[in-house]
Image 1 (tube, rainbow, N blue to C red):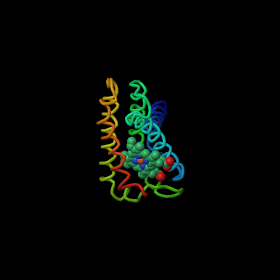
Image 2: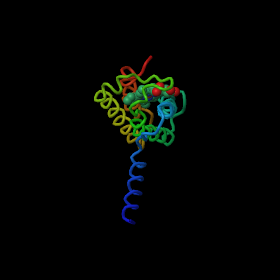
Image 3: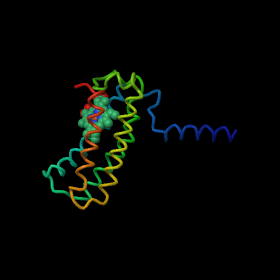
Image 4: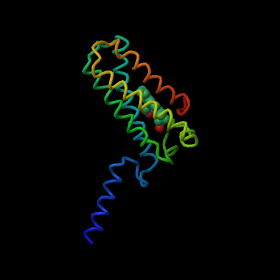
Length: 152
Ligand code: HEC
């Protein structure tokens, strides 16, 4: 009896920890979540872009903090595309995300790799020139997905 309850509890916490959208989540909620994830990604990328372009003074700690947030959010993003969330609210997600799951995974993995690398480089980058190249590589990984998996 005790054992069964424990097993049930562990089962539940594993489910929660996995971060996947539950079967009960409504498509419109998933879409809202997804757009929120990308709003956070966009916000922090814009701040870094401002520094790279010289519109905002380069601040190593601040740049690194922004890069870390984007890297963390890149691990959240795959959980914002639950099957069935292609409709239910206005969304720019293209059906190819689900019909070409392997291709989508590739651009998602690439985004995670580039964002993680930027966060690493940013930790010790004493000047903006030291983050410029990797920032550009990460920005390209956004475009690689948007070009094929997001409507105009
Ligand atoms: C693996 C695919 C993928 C990657 C990588 C990606 N995006 Fe997106 N992005 C999307 C999709 C799909 C949407 C549309 C979401 C929707 O409308 O449901 C989106 C939407 C957005 C939005 C609009 C959010 C809103 O208000 O609705 C912004 C801003 C954005 N992305 C910025 C970025 C930036 C910046 C990067 C890179 C640092 C990035 N994205 C990387 C797929 C991606």
